[in-house]
Image (tube, rainbow, N blue to C red; front, side, top):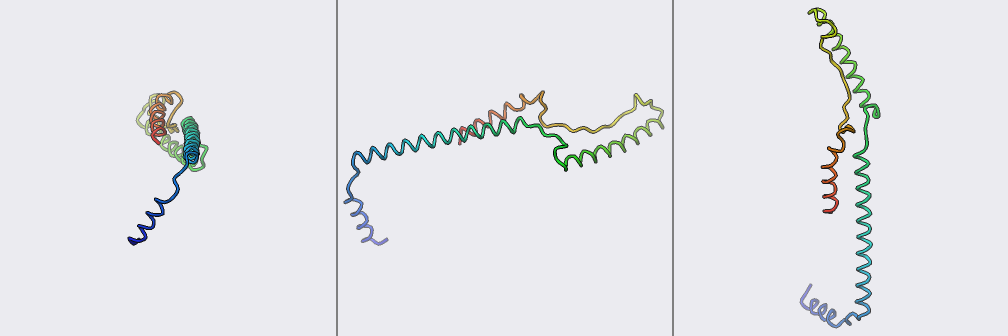
Length: 135
């Protein structure tokens, strides 16, 4: 932009008619209404995120809900059965009675059992609320 263009632009800005009081009030009202709408939208979105988080936290997933986990669990059970048979055979060779022989097993452990869920969830809730209010 050349010097002449800058001067012309400045002159155009200075010579424009100033806003009337009514125009300023209308603009102020518009800005306040937009602020209310945005605050409402933000609180609504925050509530949606909180509900989604609570739903995810309360969800319980089982190994047999997914085909991959189901196959993996069944493969682990097969391997445990083979190891158990070998262990029983070895215990009998050593003369260990069956009731005292070591045993091996497989189980699927959930990451948040109901009995400890509340204790584990509380730090997540505090963290979640802090992050949502920071945004």
